[in-house]
Each structure stands twice: as C-alpha cells, then as structure tokens.
Image (cartoon, rainbow over all chains, first blue to last red; front, side, top):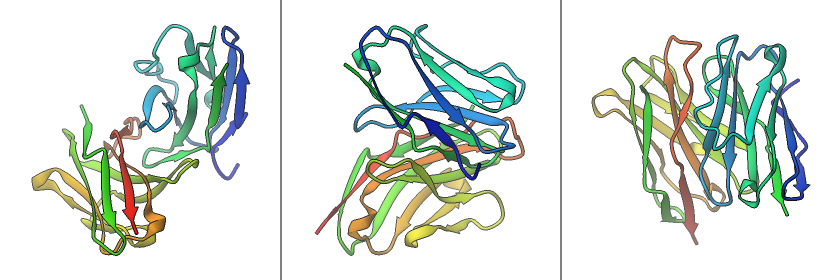
Length: 111
Length: 115
C-alpha cells in the first residue's frame, strides 16, 4: 500500500478482555516499530522488528503485551487481560533504514 | 548507544515570533537526524531530515534545522510562527550506514502559539 495502515482505528473493550491491533507496513520495509502514546504524552517505545533478527522487546510494559510479525510484513500487537491504564493510542511505524513512516494509530479505550 | 534529548517539554511563542526547538543527540557513529510533527489527533509526519552533505536542512512549512557536529545539536527553527504551527514536535536519531539501526525518538516538545 501507499502508507502504513493500522486497524482498527478505534477500539473500545471491557477490562479483562484481550485485544489485537494490526499493522500493515509499507511494502519492502524491513523495520517495524510499535509505540504507545497516552493522552498528552510523548512516544513510549514498545517493540522493534528488523528483518529476521530477534525483536527488541525492551519497551513492552508487562507480559500482558506481545507482538509478532508474520512473513516480515504484517504485525499484530496483542494485549491480554486489558487494564484501564492500557487506554492510549497505539502507533505503528515502518522504515527501510532511514526515516520512519507512521500509521494513523489505533485508539484503544478500556472501560 | 544513541540517544536524543529535547530541551523543553513545552514552548510558547507569539504569532510572528521566532520558533526555536532544541534537540541534542548522542551517537558513536555519524547520525541520521529527523524532526517529526504531530498535529492534534493525527499521526506523526516527517518535517525534515539530515542524512548527509548539507548541514542546513529545509523542511515543510518554512521549518529548517542545522546539523552542528561540534555541538551535537539539530535545533529546529522557523523565522515567523503561525497559529497552524501549534503541534507536538519530535526529534529522532539513527545510525548512518546501518539499515539495522533503530530510530530513537526524543520525548517531544509541545509548541503553543499565542495570538
């Protein structure tokens, strides 16, 4: 596609439920990032995929968070047993080695 | 290891005044440097980038930034602020010559414009 695509754009879920957020990167981009942005806050790094290398998971806040990238393309961020503090905008970005291109994000609301 | 520091989480200027957003970086190898802008309720978009030769980089909407190796800085400027410039600005760094280098973002600076 022309840009990074994220789905859904908005997600409302009940506390304790699991959610999956999807990211379709720009075709051919080997690097993929997930960030979290809470209301009025900066970017919180979550996880980084680069080619076939082991992902950098150093930013995942707890073991309730996981992500995978299938076939070096689409990525899914999964949050298990969601908590109210998980409410935020989740941003995905992809890169071919220079600048990163961002999707519009998924706004997650946990009620 | 790379890092980037943005001085000032919030900057407020009057319309028509100079905008100066500060960014200092740390990198053990020559860096790529970027400024991104995030308008309210939108994603991040690239404002400008430094990747090699020209140390003064011009971006969209009249913004520019100068790479100063001796000061390890990449400050963002605009001669005359406009109300539409109100946004969050992020500085970022990655390692030149390495396709495997992770892009590191600063904590962001919120720019407010006073009428």
